Image 1 (spheres, rainbow, N blue to C red):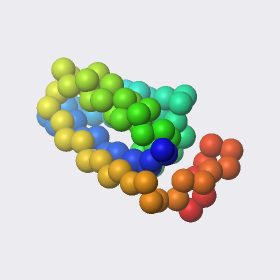
Image 2: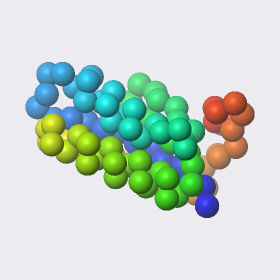
Image 3: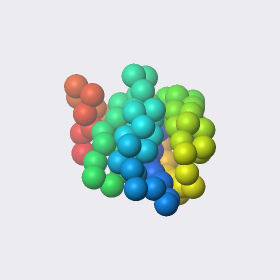
Image 4: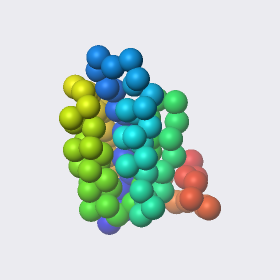
Length: 89
Protein backbone atom coordinates (compact mmCIF):
# COMPACT_ATOMS: atom_id res chain seq x y z
CA UNK A 1 0.00 0.00 0.00
CA UNK A 2 1.25 3.50 -0.81
CA UNK A 3 1.14 6.27 1.75
CA UNK A 4 2.11 9.92 1.86
CA UNK A 5 3.94 11.49 4.79
CA UNK A 6 4.58 15.17 5.42
CA UNK A 7 7.60 15.48 7.70
CA UNK A 8 9.14 18.47 9.46
CA UNK A 9 12.40 18.12 11.41
CA UNK A 10 13.49 20.76 13.93
CA UNK A 11 16.96 20.38 15.52
CA UNK A 12 17.10 22.15 18.87
CA UNK A 13 20.02 24.14 20.28
CA UNK A 14 22.10 24.12 17.09
CA UNK A 15 23.53 27.04 15.17
CA UNK A 16 24.23 24.83 12.13
CA UNK A 17 20.62 23.71 11.85
CA UNK A 18 20.68 23.87 8.02
CA UNK A 19 23.28 21.08 7.91
CA UNK A 20 21.18 18.95 10.26
CA UNK A 21 17.99 19.54 8.28
CA UNK A 22 19.71 18.82 4.95
CA UNK A 23 21.08 15.53 6.30
CA UNK A 24 17.65 14.49 7.55
CA UNK A 25 16.02 15.39 4.20
CA UNK A 26 18.65 13.49 2.20
CA UNK A 27 17.94 10.33 4.18
CA UNK A 28 14.15 10.45 3.96
CA UNK A 29 14.31 11.30 0.25
CA UNK A 30 15.73 7.96 -0.82
CA UNK A 31 15.50 6.62 -4.35
CA UNK A 32 12.63 4.28 -3.47
CA UNK A 33 10.35 7.24 -2.69
CA UNK A 34 8.91 10.25 -4.43
CA UNK A 35 10.02 13.29 -2.40
CA UNK A 36 9.29 16.98 -2.55
CA UNK A 37 11.07 19.29 -0.10
CA UNK A 38 9.40 22.61 0.66
CA UNK A 39 10.29 25.48 2.98
CA UNK A 40 8.88 23.91 6.13
CA UNK A 41 8.47 20.21 5.34
CA UNK A 42 9.23 17.32 3.03
CA UNK A 43 6.49 15.19 1.50
CA UNK A 44 7.43 11.60 0.76
CA UNK A 45 5.27 9.11 -1.11
CA UNK A 46 5.83 5.41 -1.44
CA UNK A 47 5.23 1.96 -0.10
CA UNK A 48 4.39 1.98 3.61
CA UNK A 49 7.43 -0.05 4.63
CA UNK A 50 9.82 2.15 2.60
CA UNK A 51 8.38 5.38 4.03
CA UNK A 52 8.54 4.09 7.61
CA UNK A 53 12.04 2.66 7.13
CA UNK A 54 13.30 6.00 5.75
CA UNK A 55 11.78 7.91 8.66
CA UNK A 56 13.34 5.52 11.21
CA UNK A 57 16.72 5.69 9.47
CA UNK A 58 16.66 9.50 9.43
CA UNK A 59 15.73 9.74 13.11
CA UNK A 60 18.52 7.31 14.06
CA UNK A 61 21.05 9.26 11.98
CA UNK A 62 20.36 12.63 13.58
CA UNK A 63 19.50 11.51 17.14
CA UNK A 64 23.11 11.75 18.30
CA UNK A 65 23.61 15.28 16.87
CA UNK A 66 21.19 17.17 19.08
CA UNK A 67 17.79 17.13 20.65
CA UNK A 68 15.05 17.48 18.05
CA UNK A 69 11.37 17.52 17.27
CA UNK A 70 9.89 15.67 14.28
CA UNK A 71 6.34 16.40 13.19
CA UNK A 72 4.87 13.84 10.80
CA UNK A 73 1.46 13.47 9.19
CA UNK A 74 0.82 10.16 7.42
CA UNK A 75 -2.12 9.44 5.16
CA UNK A 76 -3.32 6.82 2.71
CA UNK A 77 -6.05 9.19 1.47
CA UNK A 78 -4.04 12.16 0.19
CA UNK A 79 -3.30 12.60 -3.53
CA UNK A 80 -0.83 9.92 -4.53
CA UNK A 81 -0.85 10.29 -8.31
CA UNK A 82 2.38 11.61 -9.74
CA UNK A 83 3.92 12.56 -13.05
CA UNK A 84 7.64 12.59 -13.54
CA UNK A 85 8.35 12.21 -9.82
CA UNK A 86 6.16 15.19 -8.86
CA UNK A 87 2.87 15.11 -7.01
CA UNK A 88 -0.32 16.08 -8.79
CA UNK A 89 -2.40 18.17 -6.41
